[in-house]
Image 1 (cartoon, rainbow, N blue to C red):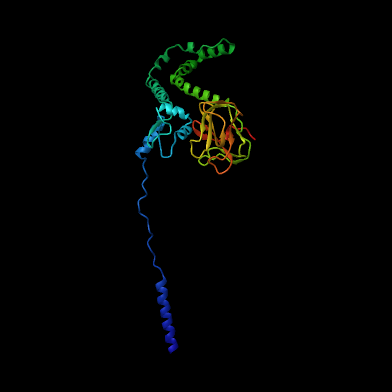
Image 2: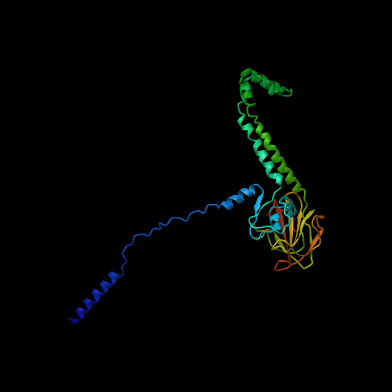
Length: 312
């Protein structure tokens, strides 16, 4: 009897425990917190974009005039002239500098304004109705041309076709020609340049936009560094942090090359150099090892040097 009562008590206790351990169904939790607001452009950022479009730049903390000139593909001496700077080393945060020639912005505005008038003058198609299509359809004499004119006179369809052809003769297309010609001229100038590797050695770092703005070539201290192409020395010094003793050579209006971490510089600013001419000795200035950091910039923007250098 006692055993039966114990079993009943035990089974009752187990039933209570199982009931306590069952979890009731819970309603799903929905996150109703509002999404983080999109940060609008600050007035300073908007102003900087507008200034960039007008060839202006706002100095930031850590900037130097030489670095700004390199980023925009300009000679820092030109920036001194355009901004009437008495001391190139004395620029202040939030100071606005001109980084493009003063006349470049005004020329662009005039060109844009001239394109507008032809759009309003679209009414002159009516004169096409006149029977003057033969003058516009004059062809050199040949048997085939004569037969074609005879067929047109016979079925009358030739006149309708001729009247449609003169209509699409828009004059605004002529205004688009000068920019295209200028672009071709600029690229032709760059294509004439001949390039070579600036130094012997193993490439230890390749171009990676955002991480490495050029290529790194390992070598020995004192090894020759030569101009990769003919041009004029735009800068020779150590005024840009992270580049050490640096030489910048300008090859055309849009292309320049940079040679960093040199031990010694053997050229001067304003000096013309030939392709293959020695400009420096390899070193480790502002670097963790002996190497040459080599960049090619187009319109101030770093580009992959392998696009220009010959295969090794």
